[in-house]
Amino acid sequence: MEKKQYGLLTLNYVSDEVNFYCTCDCGTKIILTEEQLNRMRLCGCYNRKSLLSKTDIVDDTSEMEKFYQLTSTEVRGVNFEPSKGKWRARVTFRSKEYHLGYFVEEKDALKRRQEAEEHLGGDFLEWFKKINKKS
Image 1 (cartoon, rainbow, N blue to C red):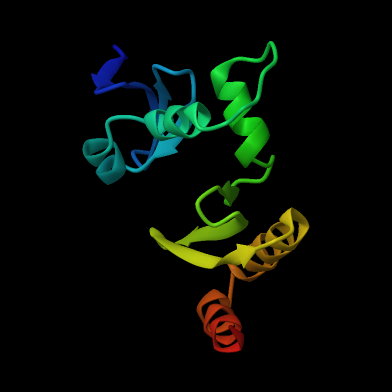
Image 2 (cartoon, one colour):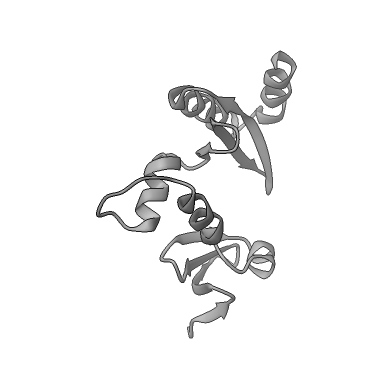
């Protein structure tokens, strides 16, 4: 398959005609649906570069590494939101993203994301309604 370009995204391959595996020019690898691929033209790297310009980290790491040191975890769906100064947890269920909350501590966001994953196979929507009533 010849690699096709979508803005800054390069389509590497398609799995089951559902998952589109892409690489952004910045080096980030992402998996998108066909709809997302047709709508998106980059992975969000320009937003990360904007964030980096506001930081005072000085060392030998690359710009992208600096961003991930500041805002990422190893867990998909948990990231730091600089504008709020909190960790955000989210999950995608049936092609819709659900906001699971903002947390002061990273461990609390990771815990909420893990709870959500445990419910994805069954009663996710009921569980999600229940945690939103508590908020």
